[in-house]
Length: 233
Image (tube, rainbow, N blue to C red; front, side, top):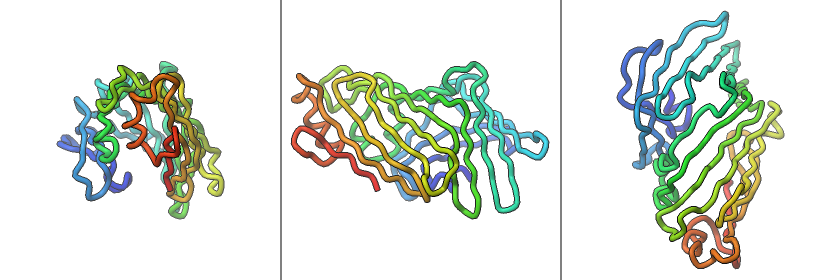
């Protein structure tokens, strides 16, 4: 079910227990038909129960989740609402190794990133109606202290990817990429709507880092002088 809902990008491997209480290894892949895969260390544990008319899901993973995280799933006639509740500690919901991204395949398996991915949100809602999904709320993915095996630099930089939406189908979910600090400068914006992502951005080297980042920029996107153009969708 997880694999089909995520178009094959997420898989639960070596599942044990039942749908109500169990555990599995969470695997990231390049999608349906991909041979690339990367598993997280340790196991993801879940417990499922009822919360009124909603289904309550509690998740734990020692390596990566900050304590117990909670989902509420509210089914309806032709509708489905999924709520990711904020962390009880008020901090990030979880942190994952950047090396996990190699499971997505090209170009991530070439970049071989190290660093950390940290996810924070005050709460988000995903809702499906008539086969269309909408996103409400805000979520931030911090890419911290990234490095790559194809660069001689000790660190590329730190970045933030922000998703924001108000549940409107036409406007979709906005996507914003910014650089917090680092020699590799990344920026861009886009929109996820009707099941498709459209994103335009660019990558460049900070002064003094051009030679060390030249090969990396060639992989990231189409070169336009000193910049690499990032285009998705």
